[in-house]
Length: 307
Image (tube, rainbow, N blue to C red; front, side, top):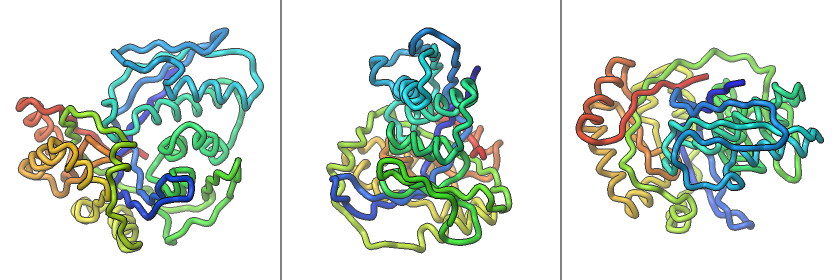
C-alpha cells in the first residue's frame, strides 16, 4: 500500500499563551498542500524503516516508526510493517514532513489492518506522537488549537464546531463529520526554503511577544477561504512566530522578500520556519515564480492546497 503524506502550511498561527506544562497554547488554520512524501507499507514480521533519502534520524526517532508501533499497541496485533519513505518535504522547514509521514502510517495501517478506527479517534492517537499529526490525520483545512490536540473542520458556517468529542488521556479531538458545507476552493502557492534548519524548540524559547486574543484573525481567514478569494486569503495570512524566526535566521526574511518581489499576493512563514510561502492567482503563475526562484539558486516549488 502506498500513501501520500501531504505537507502542510499554516495560513494563520497565533500564540495565545503559555500553558502550565510549559508548552504554548496555539490557534492555527492548517492547510495540507500537494507537496508530499511517498509512504509505502508492506506486511512484515516487525516494524522496519527504509529511507530513500539521506536522513540523520535513527529509526527509533522517526515519527512514522513511532506511529506504526503505536498502532501495534492499540490494536494488539503482533505483526509488523516495512515502511519505505521517499522524502520530498524539506526537514526542519515548518511543513510538517515528519508529522505527515506519521499521519500517513496511522491512516494506512488503519485501512491495511482493517481496524476501522474512526478518524477523530485516530487523530486522538496522533496527538501522542506530535502536535501537527492530528490535523494531518483528519486532512483538509482544519482549525488546530491547544498544543495541536484539538482539531476541527475549519470551513463551517459557525465560528466553533460542535461535534463528537473524544477524550483520551486528557487529549481531546473534536470533529463534526455530519456538518455539510461548501467544498473549499483550491489555492495556489509558491514555497521557498532558504536552506536553514529551524528548531521549533529554539523558536518558542526565543519567542516573548505574547499578544492579546485577536478573534478577527480567524474570522478573516475563514471568510476569505469560504469565498475562495485568493487576494483576501493573502491579506489575512498571519504567523506570530515569523518575527522571532527571522531575527534568529535572517535568511527567512530574504526569502520572503524574494517572493514579494516576484509578485505574490501575500507572503507568510509556515509553522516555526524556515519555509515561507506566497499566495498567487493560478497554477501558471506559481510555476513561473517557482522556476525563476529555482534558477536563482533558491529551493522553490509550486503547490496547491488539497482537501
